[in-house]
Image 1 (cartoon, rainbow, N blue to C red):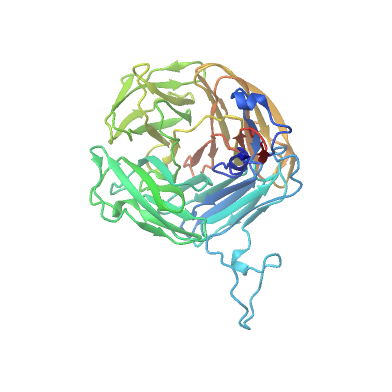
Image 2: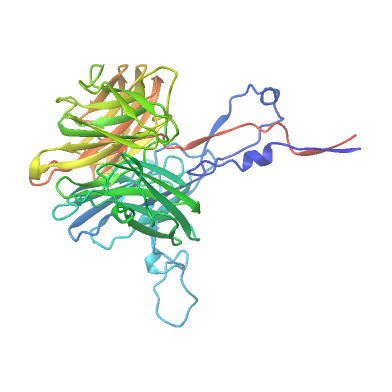
Length: 513
């Protein structure tokens, strides 16, 4: 009798991470540990990563800086080469030669429009580019080889006047099929757009659902939004529903394809910034990096499931965790958005907001974000801090400057030791590495984080926990202008530069009996 013995190898080689594909090698000789289920899956570097950056601004006075970076020493051992490039969404392959004079890309035969805005050639050193025009498009890109694991890109825009004034920063995101945002608005004084960017060669179809304090906001135009191939579509949230709501949670899903999604929040009085997607709904949440001088902090929470959530609210400061007076707990009804004004909760000391189940053993998943204001009156500026995942193995924030960067490290549980690497500068300077200890239940705000020696240009900060409990992080970039404390905050979840790869049980073979 002939008996075919199937292997797990085929399944293993198809394993993929959201940001790329794992480097997979079959173990030599097979293992009894794997068969017994006792082996720990190996973690291998991804081979390909994708990132999307939204169109930065329609303002004629917008100045945008792009930064691309991959941490050093993170590629696969056999990855000798690698590339990472961001190109405009309107890039197209050249049409067949019709006799007209077309300037072509020397490498791929593409039109001039498809030339990369930003190309990275080596890990450990960032590269930068600028786009000072209202017509700057959204960008799509990918990295492979040794540049794929941990690839990060930052888009930082400064608008000095008019609607949309402020510092707008966003970490370019990986494409996906579902995104949650807490803290958006359809109020008259807000002009919030969700930017949907499609990196693929076929159209994507997306749905945008809005939830206010009383539940879902009725909409006739939020379903079946077509995002053409390699294109970006901004959708004004206030046009999706006739209801005006100060605090709105947004759910973006795709019926076909995948997109990158981020909300551009524009406040007539408070300035503007990007609102990034919150971490996956969870019974607990960490929102790191509330500035010491915050004049207003507004917490927005949404419970996407069928159960109400009762949460304990704490602020992790430099010496420990406290409960904000009058806001010890928060009740969030299922399917509804709840907001609470915490005012100047930091009282002059930087911190991070911690949400946890009020009753132990009864976690109800929630998504959350903070709307943070610095300054007052005409000199106020707004930024957003979504709930974020823990750093895990490593996380990076690109586009740091010699002055104005603040790195916040939070250990909500046990104490932790963290290694922070300041990369080489984009135009010169050598990397610097420092180690910090974060006490249990505290936030360590580094107003002077490590800076490369001899820095020229901008640089990246990479965080790697060494021991202890989970660590959460964010980076604030302060760009003051004419007395306005412009700033933006980017959270730093794990960069997903590696993926767990289970060992194959045995090689594919055919046995004869």
